[in-house]
Image (cartoon, rainbow, N blue to C red):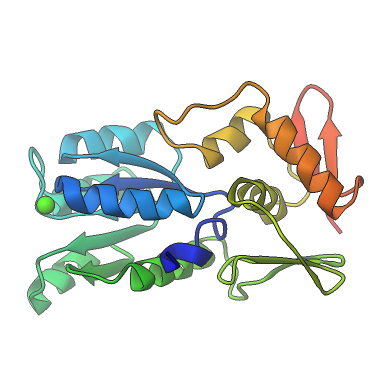
Length: 233
Ligand code: CA
């Protein structure tokens, strides 16, 4: 499967996605694809649950269906924007009329994709939105001799490719996206895992250890009692 191959980890500073979709088959397909790529995905099935989730958790992106039980997707979007919530919203819907697209974008959506859609295209649109949100027009993140390419899902050190697992990539991306910022273990876990995914008690430490072995002991610093950081260049 190569669909979101690149996304996951990428912009995805270990990204957390809110998937709002009442069609179980579509939701499970999308969730599986995104999780396979290392995204943390929370899935809700109606408009009210979407608003509650968006208000209580920090997401990098919302994938929003329009035809939803309890509260229509457009309604959800307007309510989010009225609250001042600026998180990127990608509408994914069967409503394909031009008037619907215009309404969706005017209500505050950042992009609009019509069902049935191609998972490759969904991934590319997600990456573009996440990139824009991060204020990067360049997709590759550089730090000294290290580069991380979210779209290509590749890391190089002094020009040589370094093989990372999806979780390692997600962790590294989270730290590289904000050099100089200390991220707590809980913040890193929140970026790496969706609801209901079991988190081992020492997984962050295990992944940090693996990254240090592959990328050098000095890159990721342990800030005692607070968490981890990658220093600014
Ligand atoms: Ca629907």
